[in-house]
Image (cartoon, rainbow, N blue to C red; front, side, top):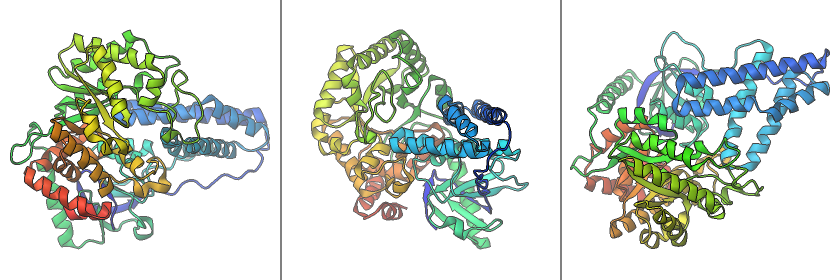
Length: 544
């Protein structure tokens, strides 16, 4: 069986299946005092919110962001009011929670993009609240005295973020793709994982022998003793390679490839340095904006950017200006409803309409740059053509920023790569969005998850165009999407002309080890094979 591997780990053991969800509640009337039943629901919502918040504080990092977002859902006043009104209309608390969360989920799915991603977490929150009302344990990772390979339809963020890594050898899920929460959190925690395995649940039972090889995406059931021994030997070899001394990213022939970190908050910098990041390839600035009622001040922004740059003295730090818009609505940026937010007023489009917000951010970045010794690079999201590139670079120059570039997420920027490179100091490819826009398939929707694979030759050919244009004009081309954290794909990207790779810090060791196994000539050969394939799976198999 095959799916999409996360990282390059391999695991062998006994399978243990994730328990099924709770049985759905009925719409029977509560038969008691409506206020008491509403209070019971309110207490359950508050308890679940607190539990998720506390879990987030324990695990930290990207997992904390995901868990705290789930906690906020349980505290949403509108949702709580909806549940209470249903109870006072006569239905029991469990059913009111199920229906209230279900309605909110439909609303978020309809919004698409970032909000649709949040919708997938609502099911888990609702299950936890219903379990609390019933006085039973919430569905979650099963307990075992022995290590096991966890098999599931998919995992809720709260489960993935708090896995016992002494017991869980690997994750294998039937649903999800390379940009799902399960994949992202597994990568952040260095968990061997394979996602999106068709027919998995029909084929696997508790206690069944299983090998999960993330590098190839292959799942082997009922393996022989020889296959198990080979898998354990390979696991040991890969572990030794990943734990080798930290050195700058390079190929076997000495060709340098910068290995950078994707970060979302200044406090994540120390861990990234510890894991060998040579700098920051993507610093997301949304944390300053998404919970604000009005744009943050220049002074506050300057303080935050200075903290980040100070952690990387003398090293490259690529900052992305605000990436928000219709799919991440901000009242002070763009709160207008759009029928298709993923294709709406977002990224540089929204910033151009609100140039004061863009200018304040660039001014703060310039002040932080002047106060530190990091090598600051600044880029804008969703650049589509040379005109938008010239616009953004021009404003950056006004504030004295030395290195100003563009994110390549829209296919048109690859088609016009030679024009864009004449204005941009660098280009950084966001493979998550580039993939979804190449296939017109929202990366947050499970119904089109089969298209969310950056291994597809259609995506790789766009990256090749950008790499070729960068080489012709001596313009650096990086990748900061999830594709950079896939060790085998990282080699292909370098073969396509990519000069730096930015990823979750936990993925750095695997990628560093993989790059050291090939020369530039071999990387180009693998890239050529992938380009000639007819599907993502065929490209992966041709390289591996």
